[in-house]
Image 1 (spheres, helix red, strand yellow):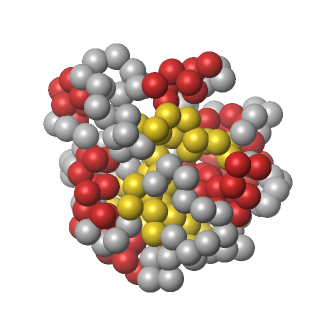
Image 2 (spheres, rainbow, N blue to C red):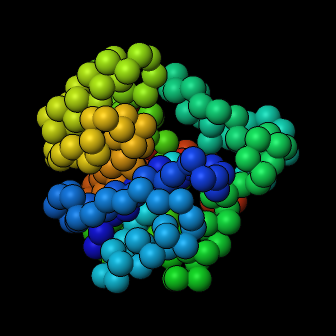
Length: 226
């Protein structure tokens, strides 16, 4: 089994890339990539899913509501975790549609099903929605500023986050993942690594370490327990 994290660009554009990270059953890095298209994402998945995989995607995968926020986002907010209120009107206006839904349909053709609760420690080909910020909120006492701020502050935040993730149990060995000169790529790959780590913990420990908020029908998010 491999565990794949996808920091999905919500729109296909020349300047927007999707970060991909795969780890194995020991939570050791297997592969990374930084791509544009759904086809490139699917090729990465096919290379690393032959013996089963669970994919964690950082993007809305099920959006039924036209306005407002989904129930899963409301529930996360009760934990003090803010998020963008995903709804069809906003996603269509800002990004031209719900890319996560399209990707889920393409993954289904590969035999990878959207599942809120795949059984721990069993063979699976499943995809789940992840929100890396919520995972980091429960993993770390303080989240380094690795995505916002001045260049030096972001570079320091990326280094601090890498070190912090090596100290969690089990450790997430993220390595450099990307050159320090490309801070956007490094941050995106870290988000993908956290998404992979979250689905890994769900497979390894089930409800002991993880929790699903929401439903497959209306949208769900896999997160870590407080």
